[in-house]
Image 1 (cartoon, rainbow, N blue to C red):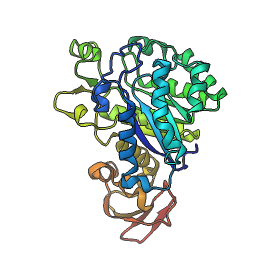
Image 2 (cartoon, helix red, strand yellow):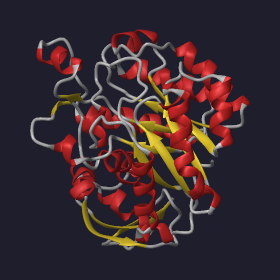
Image 3 (cartoon, helix red, strand yellow):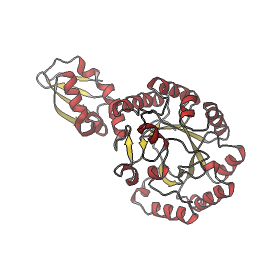
Image 4 (cartoon, rainbow, N blue to C red):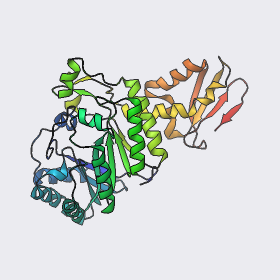
Length: 352
């Protein structure tokens, strides 16, 4: 998948904690997924897919996938895997969905289960990698090593499956430099996609106990934005699209008292994308005289990135450069990722 290729419409089926051999210190998947930890039946899968096919979004022309998220899909009993995949099979035969993706652990993959999944239309496997630093993995009680990641990615590629890598900056023992090294190691693996989920402290987890005892300092929001911004630029600069930044919002996760600390923001992904865009265009303003009035033109779909969350991008530009932004207008003649700046008084324009 290229960075610019249209992403599939993914219909998720959450199986929180099912198949997980360990309890990671940061994890409460029932809160993250907004679903209780109950076995997922064939009837539930069919109800979920039937509801999806009736949605207005289902009329989109892009390809459609069913995704089993949460838990460790390939560590489920083989018969359970088969029953869940069989529930999806009729929808693939009818052409309502094109494929299936699953999420799992790097140490829970073998030849037999991969062949089984492929026979039912699984085309993508997302690995919960979290870090490529073995000390960070050990402190988080992941139960696997970075070498397991390397082996599993190689095996998945041998079977012709697309590979996704999920990463969590800010875990215990992690730092900006350590996470940046993890990104470089992921680049060497050449996955087809990546997700970034900065660590947050959720109530009733082991990490919450460590945090409350003063043994863990989570990332600040600005730190997480910077770290994820750099990661996005590195990954997407190498043709690896980052398909999600930050945990999905669910009422159970955002209920009062559930998130104790960490860089949680309902629009975290947008904050990161806006940060990246601001970095790309900041050189336009450093050479301008202070206290001048300017206008900005940008591609229509990038106007929100220029403005930033609740116009914070505009305020940052004005604060750091000393200029006054009079207008921001859409102009699709401006190349994506760039802007055109006009000095109001002189009419001079700069584009690039």
